[in-house]
Length: 451
Ligand code: NAD
Image 1 (cartoon, rainbow, N blue to C red):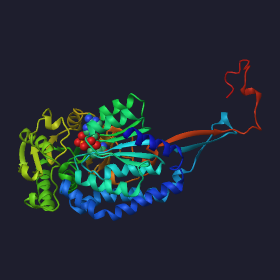
Image 2 (image 1 turned 90 degrees about the vertical axis):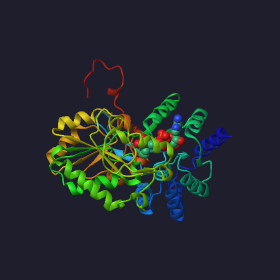
Image 3 (image 1 turned 120 degrees about the vertical axis):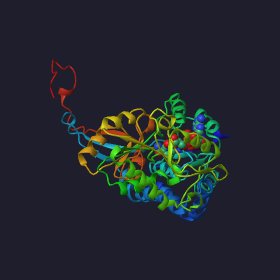
Image 4 (image 1 turned 180 degrees about the vertical axis):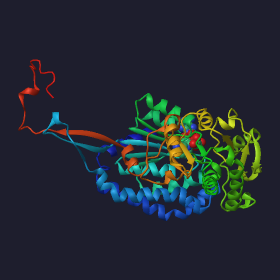
């Protein structure tokens, strides 16, 4: 059955129907209309799955997707146009250009933490680039999965966009072993990313991997501590810390540690009240498995704020930990929850040694007022993307390519980069026939350095 459905998608793709500008724009427009129609059900579902406020869901999910959709609708004609490039002297009077063609039938696999945005943002790129799409959401956010299914089935025929639900460990191999996709776009953990890469490699299918890791946040002695504390807190504890680009841990200059911790506590209380368990603005942990995993870290440092938790509500309080060993599992594994270890440094070398204990992070944040220090940090730490005096907001600018490097993934998307990731850049050289000098053909008679 699945095999036949996928074959029907291939046939539909090969009919050429998805290639025209009019078709692609129509699908994007339909998607936009449907998201408006389903806005409230999406907020309700995200509240059910993650206890997230509508406001936070707008900023981190619907707003991000809408911005990408509007950009694609405005610019698609321009993106699809062949791009003229210069021709080198040896090839003149030829002309050269790049045609962007769709890849074919692509597979998008997404995680549960931002279940809507992480499925629909790549979908926009895939549609804009003229592909047929199989969508595999995470089974762990069931309420949102249901609304997304309603959206997709309402607006798209199955031979164009197929929505496949279920346990990833079963469904994904079944999909990838029964069909040769033209591209796989995966967002999720590094461990599962490796098995997706292996599945794809056996058929030489190209992949984009958007993975996780430990994103460091450095606070220098000259940083504006009050502002830094608010900007770290808002990103670290949004979605109860279940965010791939959340600052995983803080490295603060020893001289500012106490001031920073005091400011972080103040920010936590002002954002989520003295009792975040009852705050409309504070999320829950997705399930018991994740709850137990996060709580397992609690004894790996000294609690200086928070620490309360309640499994019946899947609630874990925003928690600051100090006296954490760089060798503890808390500093070796991605936390993906509301625990914030604060470590100190006296020299940049000390801090860099701690960062280098882990593979290349997805994001990196540096808080400093000194542009020289800023550049030293940005140039010496390898990472996917990041911010200066800010945490995580680079993600929301669709003019910036988003993605990791090394263990945090490869391939970039958002905005025009999403269109590019789902397109093949076909290089074309067009050569006139009126000029055809014999000098280009054998026998060359020793003409080694003609050009
Ligand atoms: P996950 O890897 O468990 O699941 C992601 C997707 O893979 C789901 O659709 C799931 O059904 C599927 N899946 C699960 N096991 C599979 C298997 N054995 N074979 C094939 N597919 C399988 O990830 P998660 O727990 O849902 O998400 C958390 C991770 O994702 C964190 O590490 C986080 O950093 C990362 N993440 C990265 C980004 C990014 O943009 N780079 C964004 C969000 C989350």
